[in-house]
Image (cartoon, rainbow, N blue to C red; front, side, top):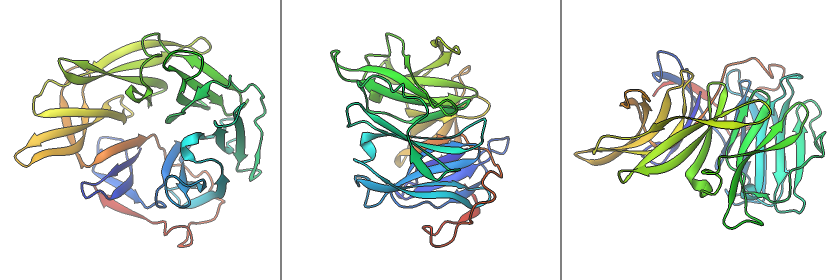
Length: 323
């Protein structure tokens, strides 16, 4: 997996960690451009967006590269109205193995989509013209699963408050689809929802309160055509010396990884911890930091025929480190 977080010194750190019995003893430290946002991981490729002049810049760069073999697949300038006005997605087409980057401009009416492919190194319109209705706004984080991209989004027009839903994009047919959430999840503030990959499923995390403490309900999406949601369990905290900040992702075993604040004689320490849904126990995994982000990642030789990173590309480097 790829793990992104801030050290307690507020310095950003990105590492690729082997998700096995040795987790998280050793990993590969990856240096990325300043102000970057990790868009997604797919087939061993990592895609990042780096605003040219800071996080509010109207122009930036998209980098697609293979951290395992230090190969850069593409480095392309992206123009638009700013990162927070876009839906951004990245994935590898399962049939052609062609990496694709998707840009969705939400401030136009109707909103527009463009696809950049590594094979052509050019932008074009999607194959399908079935863009969802113009009411979709505020795309959130991306999940890649079985050749499709999924985003959390909300519909702010025509209904009181907001209406949350999932937007999917098939990387083969390049069709967009809308997936309705449960009636209990649709009207919630979108900041109380997050989406992750759990094994071979998409899950939505709902933030709630139990006994004046935060809890996190895990809902798994099921079905091929007609999507439904099944509640798996609720992540809760029994300790008065520990606060669960958020669910940050899942290991290959299905074990949730949560960010916690642990109270000690110095105050509070922020760290990554493993949660057992059955015993409800929480175990420190030995990584201190804040604002953790996890991305599924597998080593691959994809893009082996592409150029090697050099100092011209933001001083890319990778070193074996002990976390």
